[in-house]
Each structure stands twice: as structure tokens, then as C-alpha cells.
Length: 459
Image 1 (cartoon, helix red, strand yellow):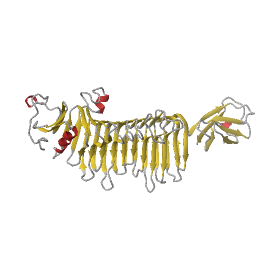
Image 2 (cartoon, rainbow, N blue to C red):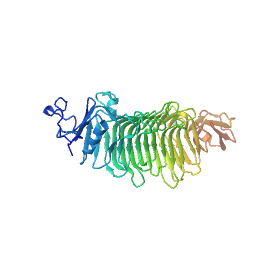
Image 3 (cartoon, rainbow, N blue to C red):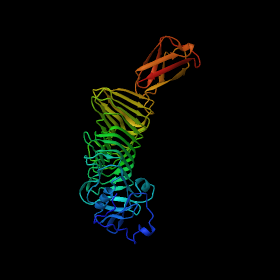
Image 4 (tube, rainbow, N blue to C red):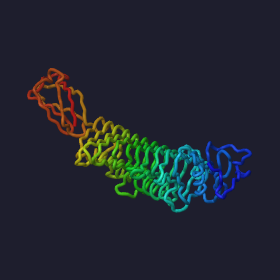
């Protein structure tokens, strides 16, 4: 690593600076440390304490700090606001980490505010393509990490973090907002994919398009606790191959400008996907909570565990599902929805749908399900299979006994079995949306609780 400054000197950190050599204690174990001093940003060698760069052009200092890591390492950016007029580029390997002071998770815990004395803010002060660019698609970048930063697009940056030809990417404890397009854009290219991305404890909010956008050139995407609020189009829009999202949270407001308004959109998936505890709070404006569109000539299994979909627009759907191949499947297990409609499926390509154990008591209608093989089981507020016993007292003249089946609609299958000798006469069974009717040709004899029936019904 070079310790040479931009103007060619080897100046040590000034004695009046908190990092002065005489009493220097590293703020963090880092190869390069960047801090503010008045209007200047200063980068120093974390081991030799020599100045690498000093300038009022903060982006230039940060870029020189990154470029100094010829053998990889970490740039620690001390708390403060850094004005970014050109993108900070990480375009080479070995692994490089950009780490700020007090990230999103710590700030939420009450340990600082953006731009305050404990937060590191990269603020786009001029029109730029992105604040941080990982790979220019020329060289493969291995294991880059962006940690504990606040990125303010300030209406000037197209993207907060833009990732191209790279692998082993970690974006952790980061807050991004006010970008013209997307907070995080995972792009890549054919033959130059973005591979193995982990996004952990990240907030991407108030961007004009998406909180997170991932193209089909992205492989193996995993998110943990991704918060997207008030983005102009979708909170998450992903076509990545092999993706798993744990606890994604999308909240919406009047900035949702697209039609229909979608909180999380997944399209063009050619590999399996899992969503764990996704939370959509629609603010009365979202038309589709989670939209999943699966392509032709593929076999994709999508599993959604414990979703919570709340407060959608009037007539909105918690899920919108369109498979273009009979081999696709969507399985929704557990969770709850409070909205007008739970799901919309209308396809001529078949496929399979399972809704299992979802609390549907707050849903006005199951929605529209057409063209797929489907099964709805064990759902609170939407009972599709039920059984029990019914006991009556015969009077010698009554020939019809009715049992409330409790199903969402008239069953397709009904089985009634006599459970007492007096119930074993000759009878036939009919049913409607509410009851099962047991019709005897000869009335059972008089008695107390002498007509006992066991029954099963399924939609």
C-alpha cells in the first residue's frame, strides 16, 4: 500500500489533529482511515499514520484511499458528511471493505442520526451515476464489502450502490435514500454476472424507483432485514437467480407512482426462491403486495413462509401469481393478510398453488384462482375441510337432520356414517353452502340422543 499523498509529500498527520502521532490510538483496525477536518477530507495510512490524500474534494480523497489498497484491506470512514461529486469506484480485487462509523442498525438503536457526530454520510452533491460503483464490468471484483454507511443520493445520484461484475458482495448495516433510480442496483451483464450477494440490515427508502433492483444477471441473492419505504415504484424488484429473502419489510405511501402499485415484484425467475416472513404495509395505496411471475420453459418452486400483508388499496390483492409453465409451483404457508382479496391467479398454463395455514379472517375474498391446480387447507377464516359428530333425538316422524359444515362454500365431497343403531336406517345426503342434510326414507325411532352421525366434508 502506498502512503503517498496526492501532492507527492509524505506529511504526517498534523499534531493538532486528534490522530496526531504522539498519542495516536486507532479508531478502528483499518488499513486506511478517512476523516473530516474543516472543509477537508483526509486519508491516512492506518499503520504508518502518513497522509495519503488531503483535499476539499472528498470523493477524490475517498477514491485515493481505495486505490491505495493494492493488496486489499479496509477503508474506515470516520463519522461526518462527505460531499460526493464523482462516484467512488471499487474496480479490482483482492477484497476491499468500505466501512463507516455507526451504521443504520446502530442509529435505529438510538446511537446517532444521519450527519450527526456518530454517523458516516456520503452525500451526492453533484449529478452522478452512482455514489458507489462496484466493478465497471471490465474486471471481476472479489468479495467487496460496504458496511455501516449512510448514502444520501440527494436527488443527484442515479443509484446509491451499483454492482456489476462481482462476487461475494456484502452490503451490511447501510441506509440509502433519495436516489433518482434505485437505492441498490445489482446489474451485471451476460457473461459477467453478479454472484453471491448478501444484504443484511439495510434500509433503502425514498428512492424514485426501487429500494432494491436485481436483474437476471444476478445469481444467489440473500437479504436479511431489508427495509424499503416510500420508493416510487417497488420496494423490491428482483429477477435474480436463486434468491432467498429473510424478513423483508416494504411500507408504502403517496410516492408509489407506478400502476399497478406493487410492494415486492419478482419476475423472470428461472430458479427456486424463498421468502421468509415478508411484511407489506400498504398504507391504503398498494394494489399488489407480492407479485410473482414465472417464465416459460422453466421449473421454479417458490415458497413463502409466514407473510404479513396489511392495509392494501381497495380491491387490492395480497398475492398476484402468474406461472407460464405447468411445472411451476407457489406454496404459501402460515402468516396472515388483512385486505380485500388474498390472491389473483389467471393462467392457461396450469401449475400448482398451495395455501396452507394462513390466517384469512381479515380477508374479504380468497380472490380469483383460475387455470392452476390448487389446494387451500388449514386456513383460519377459510375452512376447506371439516369433520365432526352430530347427535339428535329422534321423534318417530322427523326424516331430515341437518349439520352445519362450516366450510367457505358448498363442499364437493361429503361422507356421513351412522354412529348409533337408530341412525343406521336407509338415507341419502344432500348439501349446500351452509349445511349437510341427512334424509331418511323412514324416520328414526323416538329416543334421547339416539341418532348419532359421523361426518366429513371437503371443498
